[in-house]
Length: 345
Image (cartoon, rainbow, N blue to C red; front, side, top):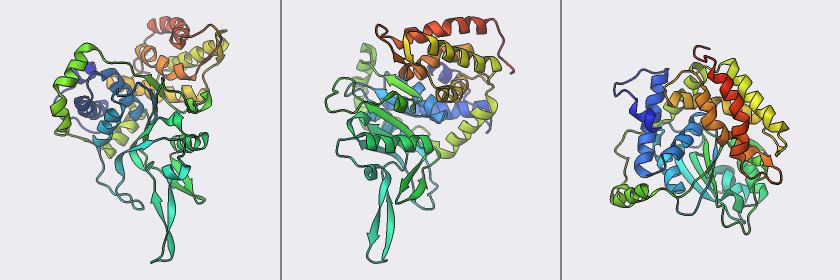
């Protein structure tokens, strides 16, 4: 992403082209990076998921900046257009998942109004552009299912009425890898709903020093003076990525071949689903756009497939590193692609 930012032209760009999407992504990256230091790789993956219309699961240590990251992203998106039914949609909402949480605490509920004698729907915190689902594995499977259904369908059902969520709806869920007492681990079938599972480790020494030295500026709202991004710009960027970033048939064949290799690998008990391949395509297209290309290349496969497939694999006894299994499946495919020309599909 740093490469992407440095290669951008400062000149204004017109709509409906790769340069337009590039500029939108740069503004988002700059605003989030001003608030979150030492996480450039994570920010890039988050933006990739946002523009690919996916969701992410962060596995992190306490105090690693997940809330700051999600809030900075939400506050970077403005939407002056009020919703006809629900009014102005919040840019960011945080939901702390607990064992006593109910599905209606997420989706909202109907309240009887004595003055009118009618029920009025009060939307829950899930009606927002960016939703931080904090410690999603600490609530009951029923609540997890309600959340994951909203992620998959972009709608909720309350009192037998289906209510659509906004087209921009984006979830950043977290779980703590250390404190597992009293948790409800997400099964593989539910993990499959997330585009990426990102493991956040401690930032390096230089980044931590930068966090300390910029504490005052960030408390004062670092990045808020930078131009935000509108909801419309993000949706337009999603559309142009789908329309203008080419996916060569060899890339599609590569995805299927890698998935097949993983399914027959003796170290793998549960391989990747067809859904994973479908979700991978817009993610690969988005990464190509972020790096200024209008076609998906082998480098995009190499960078993203371990992130997309890693949490979907169920490994057998003796196999502990999903990345190594995926890299073994990738190697022959990348070698084949290296000899091919993918531009101009």
